Amino acid sequence: MLDRAARKAVREVEPRRDLIREGERPRAVNLMLDGWACRYKQLADGRRQILSFLLPGDVSDANALILAEMDHSIGAITRLRYAEIAADEVEAMIARSPAIARALSWSELAAAAIAREWIANLGRRTAYERLAHLLCELFVRLRHGGLTDGDSCDFPVTQGDLADATGLTAVHVNRTLQDLRRDGLIDLRGRRLAVPDLDALKRAGLFKGNYLHLTGGAADRAPAD
Image (cartoon, rainbow, N blue to C red):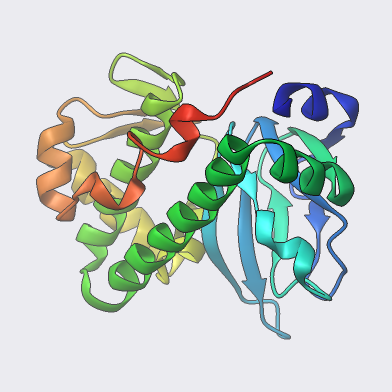
């Protein structure tokens, strides 16, 4: 059922373009198919805070359909393919399939859990710990989705993106990435990230992956047809 709905309206957007902006009325739920996106808030002077990264398989804001307007924006980081599932289709799927209803609820609860962890990251971890933690999170999520190749993965975010996600300056991010590289925890070249010792990177970032709720959730039980 979900797969059929996802095939009806597949959209593409160029890198650094918005899917929807703060203040606009949400009309659909977006399922990420290929590429990276992010949720973000932007201040009047142009400063941006990335609130989360959206990876293939993620659903953006399933509960936003009950809102009069978006309170944040969603923008593509890479060229992005996504399925736009209309509000009436979402409501019909929820009514017909308790499993899909649970899966969508699980998705929103997992997004809230990630947001709580990001608050802790911004408020209490050092710059070194923040970046190590964020890199762990993204690598673990990509691995769970089958998007890693051994100890490496595509990594299209820029140092500016990392700065906007961690509340650091781009210069501070650059210096901290050099520290992580010097300590043998990462190898970041171009658009490719290698994590030679994930356990060591987890220790450096004080990372516990339980907040990601990657197994045992309703999403694991949702029917695809």
